[in-house]
Length: 224
Image (cartoon, rainbow, N blue to C red; front, side, top):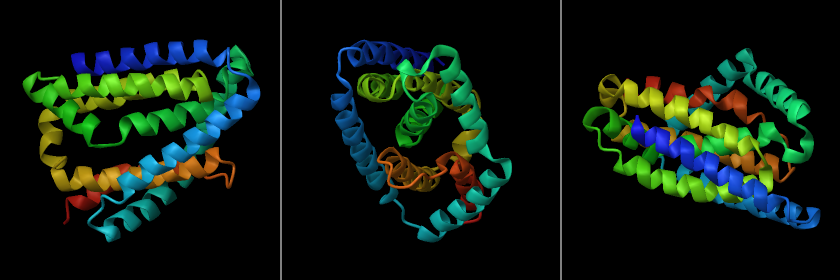
């Protein structure tokens, strides 16, 4: 799991740097930075969503996953956690829930994390995750300067997500073929677009309740 540990550390360090920068940025600049981040996140999501080659899988996964997520009410639990952390450490560190969800999706969803974690587990080669760590570290500086300490908490999501894939690499290697990863990335891209819309305050979208969609993709792709 050395690749995942390095990736986690890079996010924490990047977040610390971003928080130091944030202290010296006036509020009006922070607002503009947040809007720019939201637009950038939207473009990232659009690029990912357009990778799909099976729109039926994408639509079915979103529908089924959304129903499951709404039943569990993931967004409610996540919001409560964010509110608790924010009330504990103070709102001067930004919207913890938004930073955590946004950063977690951007860091976790995509081929690089999945393929890199499987390679690390099967062969011990963590080069892909090392490259991802550099990218995530740079992104976390920008994200943390705009969204606060919640970005750093996303390192826990990366640790659990990529670490689990690495530990289960042998079993997941058969499930996570190229087609499955592509459609997972596409579904994740749609969720990231939803985050972008929420960040721009156009419409509040309960993105967390759509998270089960990514797992549903894996199940559905086994029947294709």
